[in-house]
Amino acid sequence: MTDAPQPSASSTDATPTTGGGHPLAQLFEVQELDRQLDSLSAREAELPAELVELRREMDDLNNRLEDTEMVLERVESQTRTLDLDLKTTREQIERTRTEQEKNAFDARAQTQFGARLQQLSERAEEMEEDLAPCVSAKVTC
Image (cartoon, rainbow, N blue to C red; front, top):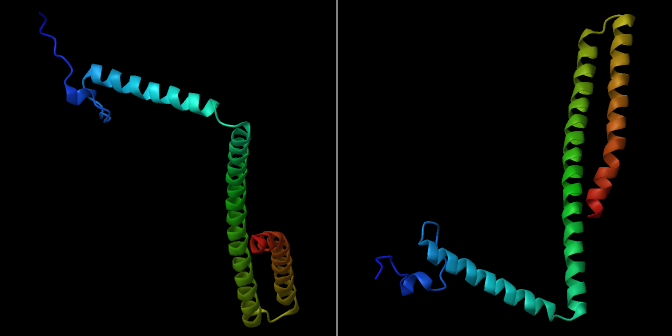
């Protein structure tokens, strides 16, 4: 009596629709997924307590692993930064030594270059000390 379209057999099968399907077919799909979810929840409730506890432990371990991987990424990033800074400082030391050999003709210039070299050397030593735990932690992984 009504001219409303009836869902065809193809719109009620178990294959998922992608968006703009018929509203009744989408509703059927949602209801089917809800029924499957209820069935899985019921089956999960029947699992032995040991399995449920093992699943929780596995989830906790996976979370800890993700946290550890994030820490490792930060340490590797810091290590790369310190490595680059140390390399740059060593290059500055070499340039300063070369400049000292070429341009330090009097005691005052020698003193200035010596002070600069001392500062750069101390900075390089500090970076090496900061880098040592990062490198040893990386090696033990």
